[in-house]
Amino acid sequence: MDNNFYKNKKVLLTGHTGFKGSWMCMALAFLGAEVTGYSLAPQEGSSLFGICDISEKVNSVIGDIRDLESLRRVFHGTEPEIVIHMAAQPLVRESYKKPVYTYGVNVMGTVNILECIRETSSVRSFVNVTTDKVYKNKEWEWGYRENEELNGHDPYSNSKSCSELVTSSYMDSFFQERQIGISTMRAGNVIGGGDFAKDRIIPDCVRAAYKKEKVEVRNPYSVRPYQHVLDAVMAYLMVAKEQYINLKYAGSYNIGPEEKDSVETGKIVEMFCNAWESLTDEKISWVVCPEEGVHEANYLKLDCSKLRNRFQWKPVWDIEKSIEKTVEWAVAYQKGENVPQCTERQIRDFLGQI
View 1 (cartoon, one colour):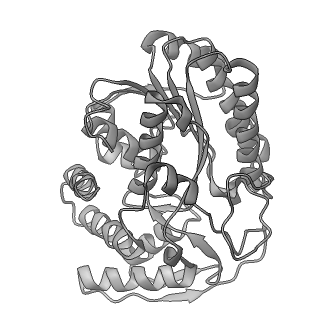
View 2 (cartoon, one colour; view 1 turned 135 degrees about the vertical axis):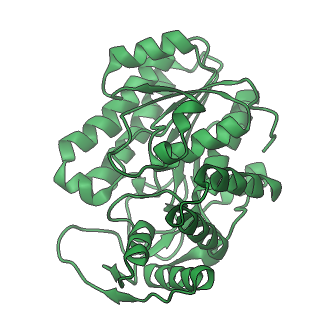
């Protein structure tokens, strides 16, 4: 990352009140960008957005991504140069309960963003953040490449596949003659401090540790490409920057950890337990609690050679470091320490290693 590129750049970020969006806001504010966020209000209870007082660091607009007229007003009022689209219904299990809502947010939300970009001449770079789950998962042991078939199984994954196709259609239909870089970014599972979502393994670990209970694990043998949220966020910003400067860098990119860090869920939980004990002297353990119900992929990995070869990119923190940083944040929060300061310190630490 060129730490000076984003200084005074006008960036519009959707989904800024969510977990990953909040880390993006903190990173952009640290880099000196003029950030406008557009999202639903943060969920009631604990949220990274509220804990870090992010509304004081960015221009925060509360709105629904499905509301085209509201979104248009924000684009017209801010005239952004860079747009990063992270607003989504992001949970697989929730998508089975609310499929219509999931498709509305994840598909029509993307349509609305692209329509606003089509109408806004100031935009020069757009990144649509999707997921590793956009691929038709054949449960094979090698990583998916960007040219593999898109066809996610569950409503969440499938809606993100549709978001990719919507982006491709708008590129072909409306942006061929316009100097704007457009990319879709497909990241694997991200972890980090401040994730309070349900049905995610690390937040489940943190909640169990706070309560001094055993961590309940549904599927300890599922393999996922875990990475720290900052590795994903900084990769999004890197591509947004590079295609802003040179359109040849626009495209679709996988973002994931090194091969050794695509590990079984059981190993992730064991590493968390060890890190928690190391920082707190409190011993915790885990137990398998299989749960019948919805389909979830057992094996999913990405081939990230395209991103590596084009940008000489590689993850900054491996899985052990990522878990260590996540536990560090969780302990600081539990003890009532200065969490915004802890969050910014981790950003400084991350950027110092690039």
